Length: 477
RNA sequence: GGCGCCGUACCCAAGUGGCCAAGGGGGAGGCCUGCAAAGCCUCUAUUCGUGGGUUCGAUUCCCACCGGCGCCUCCA
Image (cartoon, rainbow, N blue to C red):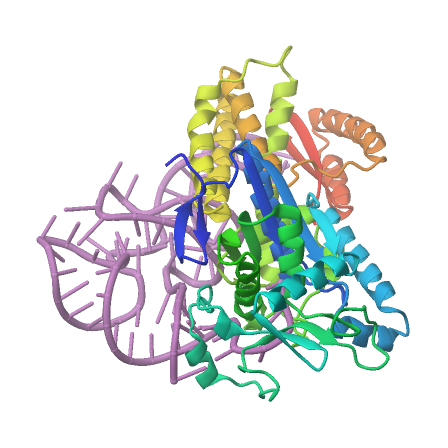
């Protein structure tokens, strides 16, 4: 049970993860088309991949994580026309915004690669597919012939016949099969275009991921990830063209990982439907820690209903963790020296947490373990307050370390209260305020002491009295 | 119509063929406190959509039904 198991969409089962190369993990996530601000649905993928990467690192793997920007396509062209700027400018603008959002959420950035910087690679790959007989040319367009790839449909679990029967797309008469998809699209007048053996044009939708992932990660790389809505047709088509390109001698990808959709008002959050919450907007209202906690409170494959109520709950839960950490630290600070951590106390929790993460990155369960640690920390703090004894200091430290490892290192949720430059000054000021108020309380001038507490509360500064003294903290957002 | 997923307490949400069905939020009571706050303790699913079946035993496996969702078209 000590090994990582990942749900593989291809086999529809959880499988023990075995890397292509010992000690190394190669992974690719389909990035977005930078043509509009990213929304919460995109953010879920970003956070999921961050967690996956972090966990692999904890397991001792060296991670090579690549993600693309599809910086040329129909939507970008349209957007450029709307905004009156070039397609490069559109892509640049929204890519930068995306990176900024990801960083703000504490995400470790993957290696980003752009489609427009790899046109030669793409053209070469399309040429090969034509050469091998998997693709055909019509009027400057190049199409992949799904019938030439017998395993077409293996990822999404459908057959060519089934799909043809239920096809809702209008049929392009030039295609041999309605499911055939474009590898290369001839440019229409006025569109950005690149020279190719078939005339000026640009890549079809799916080819960029094949080209880029194979270029940077090689064949049969470990993990290919994306939202569930990409399973068909995007990833299905990627498999077809990639394995055709590899002459069916080896698989394109070892493990397919897909996260569930974020929904809003009972409907999938999506740019096309106009039902979405931009990350930008959310970031103004909630700090990254709360957003991450919200997203991680549900297993990554489960659809997640977006709601401000859930966000508020995540905020309350985070505050519970932070309060425990703060109290524990305060107690430890009163000791003449830091005790030796009593690891045996924290070990079972670490084990359980590990097991949860190894179960297909089950962050919901992992979080439950973290909260059990919080409870034990609080219990020990209560005991210490009751008896005035600090016998448990070593245990407390071990638990605190474990909690920080779980929540901060692995889940990437910061437990530190924000570290603004003014914080130091505020610290010193509060130290004095608390001291003055303590004197009032000692003289039983409670009305004034209470008024100080109330006034500070209205400013968002909470005071908590305890036998060990008074703790203060800023009210969580 | 086809493929697939889900239905667990007031809300969110893990999970397992058989120990008390995690955890968070909320609520109730108690303890602590000058009062608060925080915290601790207890309680809040004899039960896991409904009806069958398999089994010594099912919430967990199978079937049917009801309800919700995703994909089949751009989509993270």
